[in-house]
Image (cartoon, rainbow, N blue to C red):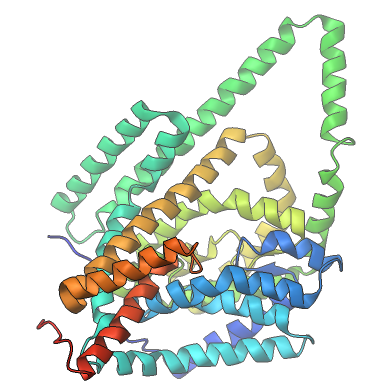
Length: 458
């Protein structure tokens, strides 16, 4: 049986690393206060009204808190405790909220720094306390790693099936399965999903680009078949539509110009996030956190690189529409940071990458406008990532419950998850299962102290 478990769930940070995390949280809160960047993709569309003064700071803070709190306490904190690796939900979602909340610019970095201190100094205390309990639910939560890593491998298959049909989806599934088996047989020390995910993502991009190229070729052929005068009129009308008649052009150019004016600040931000990734105390995703904890940095870089394809169109379009970018940009600084050997080199690379992203934002938007199938692929990728991780996290949480307390723990954890569904998901679905494991673990410890439950022997 091939399993991938974190070697240690302790957050063993040096003093330098702790101070760096605190400083980075202060910086991200400051950037959020200026409405230049937020991490939560769902909050970014609301930032335009805030930037233009149509929404008050308190209202925007409420939106950010409502969209982020479930991920912070239901996913970010449990994942950090289970893997011993920091993640963006735990660090950057709270600094989104605190930065927008702060009434003055100088208060925002103070609040962000305080949150960073709470994380780096408080997480190990919570970790030690949890491990000393009769029911050690943090060690049990490491059972989540294997379902997350292996089921995440299938997200390109789901995206291909939904966008290009069952036959191509079936072909991708057979190919990925064969590559997983081959990797496990020939390279047992390599994460088995590495080659499979690479093949799946390349297939999806290839199918999408081919469809767009064929469509453009067909459109050009139709134009040639039009009468000469009508073709010219159509071309002139299309040119006017592409330039003067599009009301979003001026908005997009204004947003891009606003971000370029703060290029030095974005370079500092890119340097900070890239160095954080280079320290190998941070994972950009659910699967990545466990790979980083295991020391499989190249595999972690590969996983986060594939995620980029699903989020570039979303981040680019929301940034151009709102004037607020992503805290980690297109998230390319994550995989680059994992692979770089030196923090000083990571700082330079991160600064250059985020600067290039900001400068190229308008061009990226125009290119995406000409590739509708590629844009659709990114939407299918995001949906597939959410679906595969949702199932993996739920299944892994139930495995953790089984380790914690057998059938009774499964009843409690599964019951809490179902209750959350019945109540209209006050905790977002992806975060509900890990949160249920934590709550269930606390409840089982209470029952043990009341002499109503005997922990299972490991």
